[in-house]
Length: 470
Ligand code: BGP
Image 1 (cartoon, rainbow, N blue to C red):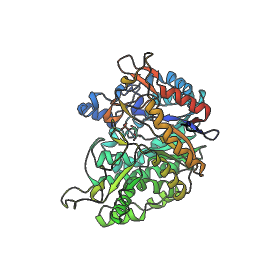
Image 2 (image 1 turned 120 degrees about the horizontal axis):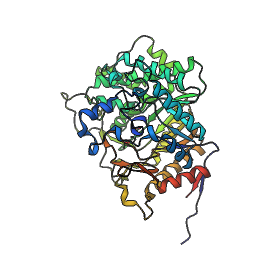
Image 3 (image 1 turned 60 degrees about the vertical axis):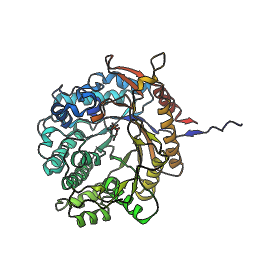
């Protein structure tokens, strides 16, 4: 049999290669350097049992102390960019009061060290980590908190704008809405659809106001948002399945994608909320502000698709209102490729479908893959005799996704980079260290020792060659 021909997938010069993480997931030092508590510090103190093996946010990979070494390691792994987030509660411990100078110094040192190592900081302002003082005022459901966030964003531009040229208002703003007010996986874990809608609207408004502040003060660079775009695939072409998938798309993707990129909410979503009696409070001028302050750049996080079918049974009219009143998940689809550790389907073509959608329906806005990765449990199974994790499955995962990114690029999508999730194994919220995602492993039992995995070596080659062969 003839060997299959190999192809080299060449990416453009200056393509962004790197990874992303977030303050709460990597910094550690949760109670040091004058940091205030955020919802994670607070929740862990109250209910450590919620966290996998009882490991909380003070036990992360300790970037707070080890950033010099870690940034060198990023460079070694071929990173030309990396996305950390700023911890709002480190910079302004009570959310809307005094600025913590130690935090200013810390972040300035981090960003300067990144620049010195040719790793461009892509800085995210909000990654799931509401200061507890702000949550006690209602978090994203509160207008005061929106204003406090805009003040915080403005302080970040002032303090770090000379070093940082790429800003992001939020990471996955729909996730706190789901976690805090629908499904209970972020503090305070309430189930209240009205609050969910208000929190979502306020997050969009906060983002637009941050964009406005950034532009008004004439900072150099770009400001964007990071969204988890999860395509909703209908079970069939039956109109009931199509409608169900359309509604899921409205709730989970277009609720943020449309206002951030086009400056307006989808009409179908507004009608649905009106019909059901769940419109948020909108003040005069809000919609105009959202219209006039869209983002320059779109980060796309992609892990899994959403499979949707029409509801099998009539919803209980007395049950609390939830988005899945309109659809069911099509979990029984045959032949799905699954990541069993995270319970997420692996569907590589999804990344291409998103990129085509962004090209065709969102003005081909400059975009990049800002997260993509595979979390695996018990990776010690794959250690070789030299103590290196042989994570061929992860290399395969990246290659198969990158092939589709490459195809979208060839067809004209304005995709400028691929940052994976993530650099070093990090702390994953309630899952803590259950699943490992890193290009570098972290030995929790051995002083947080870092060891480059096989995928880390592969990623270095990928970046150095600006492409790969397969
Ligand atoms: C994204 C988040 C990240 C990260 C990742 C992996 O949604 O932006 O913070 O955690 O998912 O998911 P998890 O950690 O839940 O396995």
